[in-house]
Length: 379
Image (cartoon, rainbow, N blue to C red; front, side, top):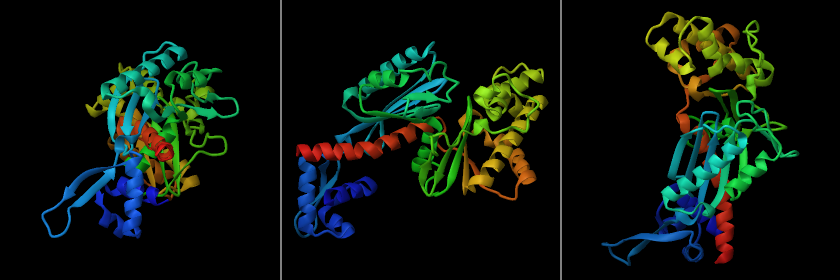
C-alpha cells in the first residue's frame, strides 16, 4: 500500500525527494525509504537527480520509471486506422495514422497487426513488451457470443471469430471497447471533460454515436449499447434512407453520408460532407442551407439527450461535429425551440486523437496494476 501511494504521487506530481514524499503522504521517513527501496529494486522508481549546495547532505530526487511498462491504443474506423504506444505516464512514444483501405475484415485485422509492429519498431521497442492494449472499434461487443454488433460501417466486422482473430493478431493482453465511449474517456482524461462530473460526447462523422460520463465514470448501460443515439427517430421522417433500419434514422440523415446525400439532392457537386462544409464556408447558399439544416438536426438530438441525462456539458466530435463554429447558432436556436434546458456545448479538444487518448487512458488503468504486481513479485 505504501509503494502504491508513492507511485500515485510520482504519477501526479513528478520527481520528489524523500522529505517531500514523507510530507505529502504522511508516512515516516524510514517508511518512505523502505518503500522507495522496494520500488527501485523492482524497476518502478529510479534516481533522477540530486540537490546540493546547501547545508546538510545531498538530497536525492526520485521519479517513477515511466518505461517500466508500455501500453497501446488502437482506433479502428472506416476511413482511418490509428495506433499509438505510450509509457506509464500516458506520453506517446510512437504513433501512426493510416488510411483504412482494407477490402475485408480479415484484411483489416492483418493491417492492424502490421501497423502495431511498425509503430513499435519506429519507437525502438518490441511490440511483444506491451503490458496492455485497448482497441477502439465501432459497435458493441457481446461478451456472451464474443461478436461485435451494431457496426454496419465496417463490413464483416460482426462475423463470428473476428474478435478472436484480432486478439491473436495483436498477441498481447488486450480489450475491445466502443470507439465513441473511448473518445468520451479521452475527453474526461485529457480534453474538454477534465473536471466535469457529468457530460456527454456526441460524435457525428461516418456514424453517429454518444459516450456518456456520469459522476466521473463512463456509463455503458445494461448491454453496453448506451449512447447508440443514431437509432433515435429523426424529425426528417420523410427522408427515410434505404439503410435507416440498419444504421438508424438519425445516423442516416445526420452523418457525413447524410450530409453528402442532402447535397446531391440539392444539385451540388460536392461529393462529401467535407466538401459541403468547405463550400458553405466559401459562401455557397445551398451548402450553407444544408449546414444549417444539419445544425438543427444536431440541436434536436442534443435536446432529446439533455431531457434524459441533464449533462453539464455536451462535447461535439467527429468529422461533422467538430464544425461547431459553422452551425452553433442553428443548434442553439433549435434547442431553444424544443427545450428549456441549456447545456454548455463545446467542440472536442482532442480532434482525431480522442479515441486513441481514451484507449491509452483505459489501457493505463489496467497496465499500471499489471506492471506493479509483476515487478514487485519479481522483486
